[in-house]
Length: 320
Image (cartoon, rainbow, N blue to C red; front, side, top):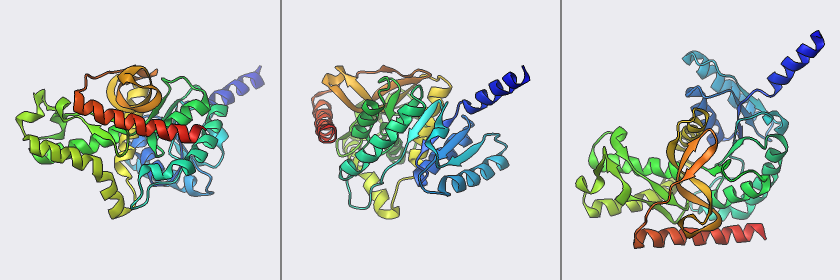
């Protein structure tokens, strides 16, 4: 009887719900820190580099302890440790270098994502999977197809990162609090992203009431290009992606039903079929609970279709 109870306790501990982050570089560590600071769940950092995830976990634990946050972060080189995870964040792969586009990483990262996705399917197929690896949209599609997960379980973090940059430019141009700014960015996380100035507002007041069309156009272009500027200056984007993933994870874990742009599998929405691309969604405990289909004008639709075509071609390359 006693042995039976001990086994049950050990089994429960082994299957304790956690957030697993696969890839313990700067972005993976930033995601872990942001999730830890929000007190979302215990965390596991997994990486093939010996010592790296363990060292990052120790460092993050020290900060959380001083902040009074009683969460456990541990590092591992064993994929089996993700068993029981409620959320898995896939950051594994090469990052962009100065002068590179996201699509330059296509074949190399596809091989990595395919291999790691098979590990995810082996150990925790019931988890929600958040893909961060670039090029984001085709990698999200590849992870979805490789794991065999439900389409509502798998999403790519791209739109929320683009949105954070868009909101920053709006704040700088209007000199109002970021809390009052509501905006949206959709389409490809890449050269064909679509910041929706027409759908943006400040406390319900259209953005056009605060800035001219010329300034809106400038913000539109700046949002599309700023990631390359950050990479050219410091080598990688780190903090904003970490915050974006934590926001997505929080909406899922707390069932907040937040409206967040993510890369999702479309099956007829926006005229697209069988590809992943950035769209507004409602995120809750079931994952992607609804895709919101916006009524785009001709200009917006043209850009979105360019994004669809770019993603579709990338998917064709990696799936054949």
